[in-house]
Image 1 (cartoon, rainbow over the protein chains, first blue to last red):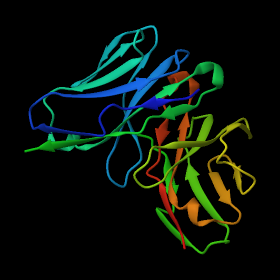
Image 2 (image 1 turned 135 degrees about the vertical axis):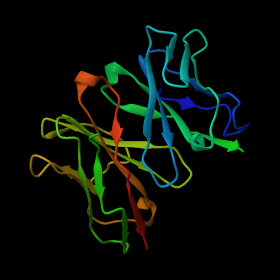
Image 3 (image 1 turned 90 degrees about the vertical axis):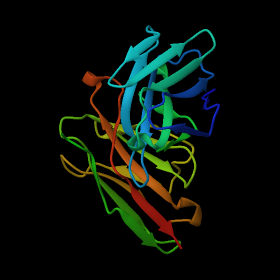
Length: 113
Length: 114
């Protein structure tokens, strides 16, 4: 079935530290994963994505890691800044089921100055 | 940078009334979506739309819901007879398969049903 979940509902980090947000998925047929950031009162904003034929992808200050063996996805944010405070969602797409993203529950990231 | 725009940002309505939520997707996108988010919960898929017809819909998207692309730029979600439980933030999204499955979301319409 469709199931995307998160280990930690809230993560508090000190400004300048690295953040790691985790996500578990249960559908082995998922072939595309994406992280979104949602600030209060706004829509989800794209951060980074990764396809199932990769295990790591880097962006600006962010890295996504995919471990298909244990069906685990993580988002690493380097040198976390106050502006990174938001809710982070992972989402998966199962191509054979159409172009539909299934979202996880979300993790709140709080950055302490 | 192109963006998805949604109007209104807030909508208050009485139970049983009809509401229409409006969206202008990114101009060269071909696939359109509505999602909703009840306060404090995850973003839930409602419906996808391509080539002037619904591609897929969730269990939430019952007979009270409908979508329409009345012209070349707008994409609307109509709820015929709103219920209290329809209160949520509704997000429109669009994508172009040429850029993969990444969806671009609007800022949402907060619907409050009283």
